[in-house]
Image 1 (cartoon, chains in turn purple, green):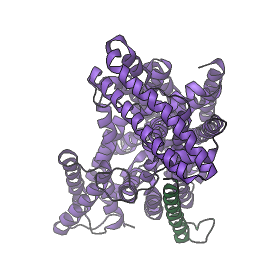
Image 2 (cartoon, chains in turn purple, blue):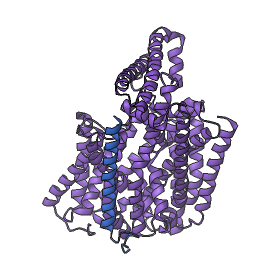
Image 3 (cartoon, rainbow over the protein chains, first blue to last red):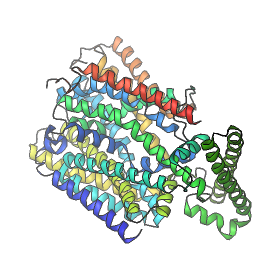
Image 4 (spheres, one colour):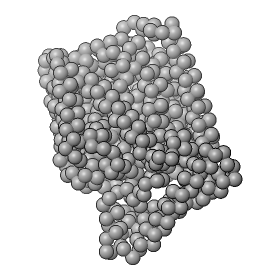
Length: 567
Length: 38
């Protein structure tokens, strides 16, 4: 980081915090603090929804994923617009009319207290375990790239989030999310333009796209159905759709964004705008990663992008085993570079024979490079006894720090901070809301004044922000448990979705039916997780179906009239 | 709280239809993109 980068980074962060403090003024009642007094316009909610969903890891690893695996990850989002339409037609008007602070409060109005308690408990466990990771994961990447102490980075990010989230509540969170999302989009656009400008003189943008496609990096759609393939059209539409329904319809960190809308129409518009903007945005981020791949066709990349791993491979202890891998990689890189230039030239000259020959050489060289990278990874894993080493998260930032000019590096590091802060502020804010509304006000102190609840909300926000930082400080000791924590969301979302589907669409279902349905749904998801190889995207479908079936069967034997009319 | 009509297209079902048609068009476009460049 050069002085100009520090100026841009610190300036951007200072602007975000000051803007949050400014926009969060006047949050002096519980309704203003937790729901922004229901005054938010659709565009602010939409950008806040997108910013909360896009964590720093999403941003860092999505570009790397396109470099390694191509663009097929975009299919993960294909179900999102369908989910947004369903939620706009059902959940949004129901939540607004029920005049609730949390999605789980609605469950008591519709069913009973035990169903609400179980759903809020599931949310607090799941989101509580994930909240520190939003801060920790980017900090660990920055520590490898720049050598910054990861504990200090999480502390700085956590402190900045705490300042505006505790003082300004959801209004500050939403408006800073808007700024953060705009900074993220601007940063990505600048990075994209610079990547294209950094391509060699004879290689045009069209050549770059052609070369990326020639080795399968532009594989955006796969029509083949496969239960165990995480990313294809069908898993994206069905599995991704159920996941989006669960996340945007049942997770308070998202529901709270659109509960702040000044009207039902404004909340609906925010979801529908997200539905239309999210896929092109993810496509663009992946495309940036594919262009980074093309850049490294002409500029020698490291064998592995994680610098600490590379230092260890080059150390005296591993030199003998590393030397042949290095030689294979170097030779393959030169062959791939020559083949790529020949292929681009043949495409421009429309020379079919030369094109076929150079395409063959290009693909073979790419396979050699993949093989050398796999050998390097295996050697590092063998040296470390580590099973899941992956350098995907380091690819984009390695490119940024080595090749982009002063100022732009600072801007893109600010993008990572912004993404981490926008996700964690939304999580902290929603955890505090569920703690106050579904636990404190419901079970501990039901009849206090508004002023009392406002201060408890501030204290709960400060507690969860402190907890997030504390959890992030010790996340390194969790090791591979972090992956389990990331998986946790998909272990609970299916049953949460099922109980809301029962609430919205099944008039005859009783509170006991919904409660037992949730427990059965959880049992089914854990069974699928432990005893089958089914991809995690399908857990939401399984959990949801089991909750509905159990809820209907139990309610058939033990019926009770609904307390609140479903949709 | 009353459900207001959308600011464009007159009714909400029409807006939902536009979003779903847009999704279908995006998928078709991405599929053509995949086929063309592979």
